[in-house]
Each structure stands twice: as structure tokens, then as C-alpha cells.
Image 1 (cartoon, rainbow, N blue to C red):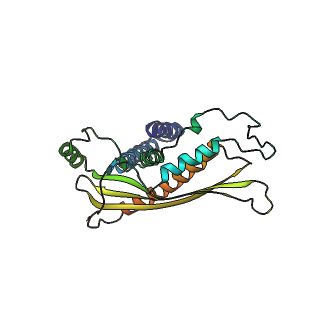
Image 2: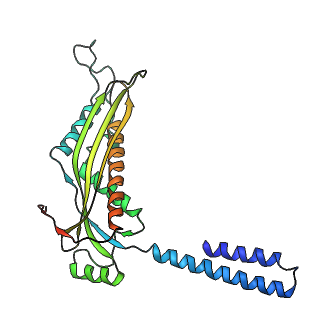
Image 3: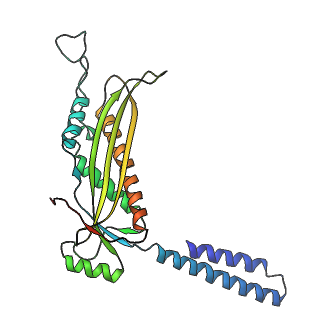
Length: 256
């Protein structure tokens, strides 16, 4: 696309110069040639600048106690029809909602990991793939050295996972479903395992709801909170990586 635009510009300028003197046409041609060379060089430099600097291997998400169980409980309650006080026998006044993808159990750890991968793929300085098998540590090290990549192993730690239903705000009629997610992205050097980078993210998302919370609403508010928090943490971590290097330290944690 850049080459097409450059040649289009050169053709336009030369066409406009066709009625001028040979000397002016020659000077103009030289100027156009210089301009084309500058633009092409600039494009090459941009391509070089956008080449990945970091290889990142993604570990499984580390969850605070009870996070997966709480998400499953929320969806289960949302899928259960609300009781009707006028129906003492407890017979549902309406049919229960049919099973749908949004009512399936939410594996929070996998959801967070997927969001982390999607977020990192948008970072031009990051690559998540190598030619070498990830299990072959020596081959990975050699490839990263050959390509000038710094290698890290990343994981998300979900530190807090709070969900609640708030009363309507002043002047409003609908209640609010609120989801809060607090997490950290932790990166260690690969394969040495030395703590090298980290970032924090926290998000609180609210959506209006009716008398009953639906599974789709539960999933929506959770996904939005996770996405927002992960993006914050990744942005902070990438900013730290762009700064002068500090000395990595051993991370005291228990590997799964």
C-alpha cells in the first residue's frame, strides 16, 4: 500500500511538470526521486522498528480461592427462574430459559488466559510463536538469541473477584449488576524464571438489569471487567519493559 501511494504521488507530480522547461523538469525529477527514496527508507525503518522484541510464553491463570466456584454459582442462580410470591407451590409461571452457550459454566482461568493472549497479539513488540518447539528449551533460547528477542513467561493472577447487585441510582428504575476484578500480570525471564516485569489492573463494570439476572448478563459483565483489567495490566507491563533494564530477581512462588 505504501509503494502504490508513493508511485501515485510521483506520477502526479511528473505529470504536472510536463509543460515546464527541461531544466526544471530535471530538477523536479531529481527531487521526486529523492522524495521517493526517503519515503521508502522511512517505510523500511518503520518495518524494522515494528519487528517483535519479546517472545512471551503464557502460563495458566492463577486464581484466588473460590473464583471459579463463585462464577459458576452466579450463572447457576441467573439461569434459575425467579420465584413468584403469588405461587406458593413454586411452580414456574414461565418456562425456564433454554440452555445456551452463555449459560454454560464459565472457566474463569481459561477466560482470563484467552483475554491475555488476545491483548498481547495486539502488541507489535510481542510475538507468541516461535519456529522451535516450546518444550525444547535450548532451541527456544537459540532462536530468541538469533532473532534478538527477550523471552518471558507470563501469567495472570486474579487477586479479587467481587460481584453484587446494587439498588437503582437516584432517578433510575433499574438495578445494577456490578462485577469487580482485580489482577496482576507477572512475567519471569524464560527459562531462568527470574522475576522481570509486572503490571496491575482493576476494573468495576456495571450494567442495568431487570427483575432477574440472565446468564448472558452475568457473562457480559464478567468478560468486560476481565478485558478491561487485563488491558490495564498489559499496558503497564509493556511500559515497564520499554524502560532501562533492571536486574531480575528470583520469584518466590510455587509452580503448578
